[in-house]
Image (cartoon, rainbow, N blue to C red; front, side, top):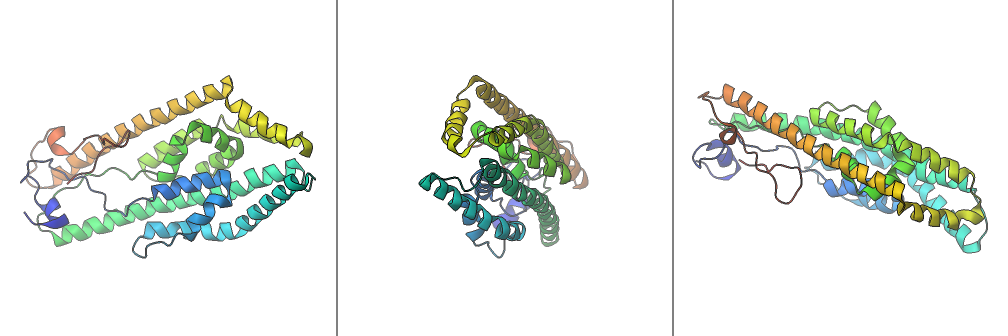
Length: 312
């Protein structure tokens, strides 16, 4: 067989491995950056600014999406976020009300994050399209360069942003639900994804964040009735509620839904690998019958839950 990446694809049966390779031809996903952006919905400019300052690699189109979709909105909302944060610090320092809590909390923790959520959902849809284009073009290029091309069976790319919203820490999910569940639901419905894995994740977003909209409405109502002098009580009450039985039940439900999504997504990946492997082998001579074990690799990852490894 040949050496290097092409050799891994060309020599199909020399090492006695699966008939089909499992290789993703797209650029790697920026998983850590996605987590920082989820934190940005809660903490605002503190975690958004470092993401915008990251210099994208010129040869990685997926990295350019962050500045393309977030730079212009952040030029608008980041100064406002910082201004409101400074004013709030001054209020606490001099113990004098400058803004009513009903004006500060909905604007800083709901209105401005909703602009960010809109951009993030559009970014997720654009990222999905780039992955599809890269897979198509790079696989065609490899087939053109290799006379004996090993069949490839790869599942749909994971929707990184939606997956982080589903599998986030349940405590963080409760806070996300209290401030941004409504915009997350709205923009999730207005930005449909084209892949089956993307639609599965969007379905679980609707299931998990729809009940949390009541929490956001309750938060707005409580802030409307709070005075500036009662803000310390609001913070203490919030942390007290996080240790209450209702919140504990919500955490358990969030964990159950996240686990359910992980199992459903894993079954979908397994089905897609097998279906696409059978289709690829059916087009590649000789079109013999293979068992599932010899057709495509379905080894579970050791370091990550509900994931399969890629192999050639």
